Image (cartoon, rainbow, N blue to C red; front, side):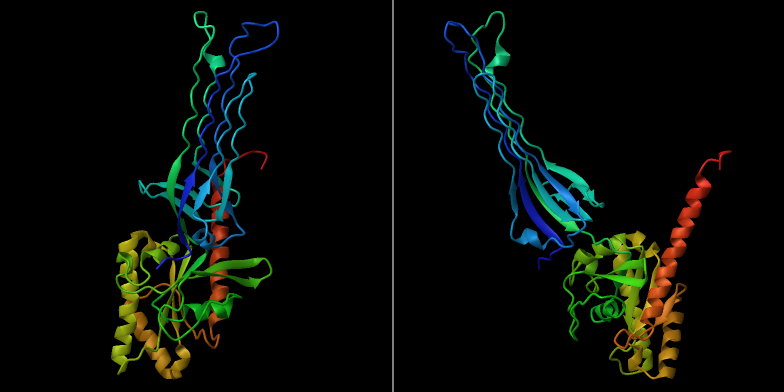
Length: 359
């Protein structure tokens, strides 16, 4: 399955123009000497981050990008015109990888940031450069050099503050619908969400954060099972992870239900550790979803049993994304978490500043 957050493209820089072999020919000047100009440089290919883009879907339709060739040199010491550069706009957060070497060429994380991915060829030298005291009429010139030709893989890691983790059908898309204006597709079958969705959660004026609805993970995701590592990549830049769990699985008795919920949480943790051990150190809150399907007493007792079995120490919330129960409290707590984080960073910067008598 090819997803819109990953695309392969080919970029070809322009070749340099050839140098010219020419001699000055004017009336009354029988031995004018060489006057061949240099060829123009070939155009280069650049990638530029654009905050107005959020997917790589356009690269499904256009995969080849070719810059203009430099013009050849001409007589009368006229140099060839340089080829025009090609600028390719990509979303902020795009990682560029060379397919041939698997080397990461660059990472565009800010709006307007540019990256040279294919260098244009250098123009050839005309015969004007080869004259000497012993060679007054050189008949040699150099051709332009060949521009770079590269196969690139573009990967978009969503730049979201919060990422939603969980098994398929845990209620992640319903939660992002409840707290933001995003409208991901919701249905009662696994892998309804095939592409990551972004939603802006506005707690109040000028106080908001970006929430990423990441497609569901299953056991073996780190090895590519299900939708695989293509979505584990997206959580690497999230500052906070919300782990959504279905509280009402189809089980015969209470003990089986609790064991099922605990097993799902542990499975996600194992896949995160296998992909990148640092992900487990990221702040992660537990959202026990679909509580509206249970009676109040069963809901509370099951929640406490799950927390006890997991030995959960981080914040947790009992919610129902479908009925919006408890969802706005989660949004407010997340915003408060980021405000506290920002205040702590500001204080740390202030304390690290050297003392000055002018302060």
